[in-house]
Length: 226
Image (cartoon, rainbow, N blue to C red; front, side):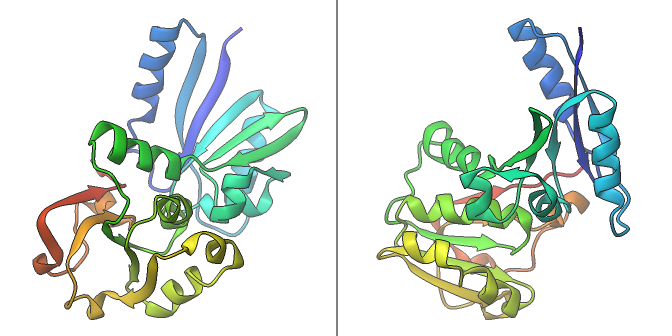
């Protein structure tokens, strides 16, 4: 019997997840279907689409912008990683309950440190954005003990709220953590800059100075458009 999966977001037409999972299924001999689902942005509309999907036999979903926080808040159970992030990028039906997890952070860390072979320890890191994508990677980034981690957002207050949770205080250690507005980014260089804003969905770049990039810096974009 074919297992039914999907990725849900708004926008979603750009997603390559259906092709990627089709290749995974072929390589591992799994019988699955995997579709991209567009959810309306209205209040409660996202969760209505989610519930209908699982009522029709869905096994699991990937969740992308802008629904990661809503997925976390409405699920029956949250994994420790989702709890740290207060956001989720997966929903799985387990024993009749919708369970969330967040794999954004572990995926980012593995890609940088294993695939790119760039250690994060003692690096100067800038995280752009303060939405669900950024929430998913902040805690895992801190666990790697960078020398400093600055979180920048168009609105500084959102970045300030973002870094003042008790969960983050437990893992900050010696890492210097600061919140900034984009307009305040001018007096520091960074070894790693991670774009967790949605600018990439429109094939745009965050408005930051080129001088922020230290020699040999890594620029990492978590989003992609068409």
